[in-house]
Length: 111
Image 1 (cartoon, rainbow, N blue to C red):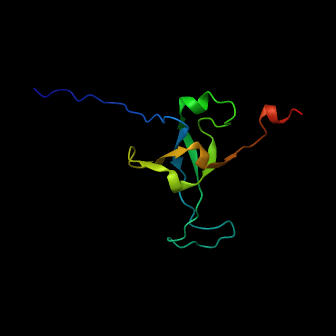
Image 2 (cartoon, helix red, strand yellow):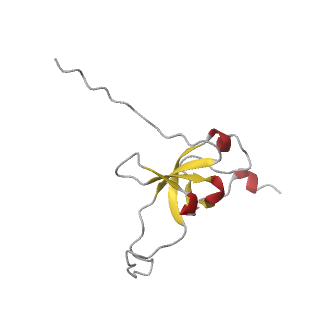
Image 3 (cartoon, helix red, strand yellow):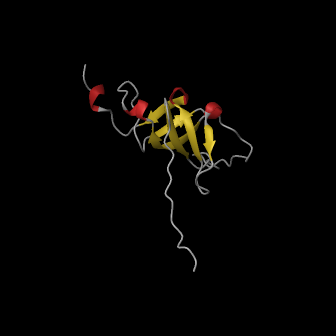
């Protein structure tokens, strides 16, 4: 009698001042319609935060949260071979260059 297969659900939790990012698909054309060659390399890339470490979650000076779209420098990003169809990276918070926002955060309106 065959033993029933058990599904094991795993997740990646970044430790320290790091975030887990799902890299966006690279753009093949510019907004003006110019096709980019495959070898073109831009030193910063965009992605969505999948998970944040407890350290960042508890630090009010770092305005990052899950699902934020960010611009990051990939030099120190560590690739995670976890999901075959997604490109995941553990990124140090100091390599996060910008966060894309649709509106200002409430604390930015003060002053």
